[in-house]
Image (cartoon, rainbow, N blue to C red; front, side, top):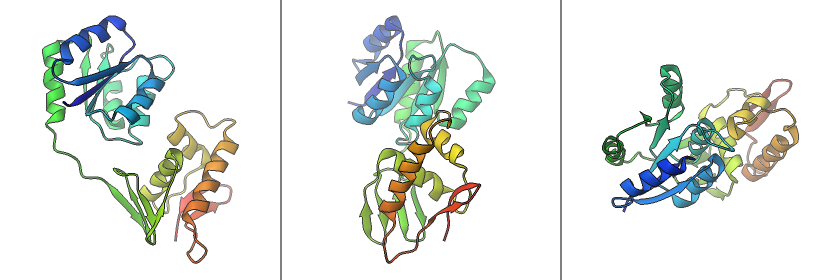
Length: 220
């Protein structure tokens, strides 16, 4: 059975969705944003139903974080009829949205549409002798396999997707962590140091370059 993850803090709506979807899918639900991210990693759903108004982390933050490690179809459940916000959500990676209150048959139809979408081939980013696979999370350099943490992978992905572009430290942190950079200098410094150590080899050039006073870039 295809797997559906519901991230919604309304108990009554959760019960309604479970009753409507369980006969057709393997369904799990959680009621806060942080749990939603963890379950998205571990449950590996085929579709996510994501409410925007969540405790701990907002739906917007959950969407951006999931998109760092998965391209699972995400259908946003929103009570707000705001075209500008809807456009931003779609630009941030949402696949579809339904406005509350919604018809359950229509929601199931939208889920089926997402499940029928052809599988997207993994995106493989390359820079010189570095290769990064966004589907398998494999990173290699000059035929060496490299094991990165989730945050290290996300930083390298950001840099390798925009070669030679200089990112300020605050831009990197706020993009990857989805929170203000204030007071996070040490956290970012540790992750950058670890990333450098893992992808650098004595006989090979260093690609992560500090542009003093400006930021960080990937350059050869």
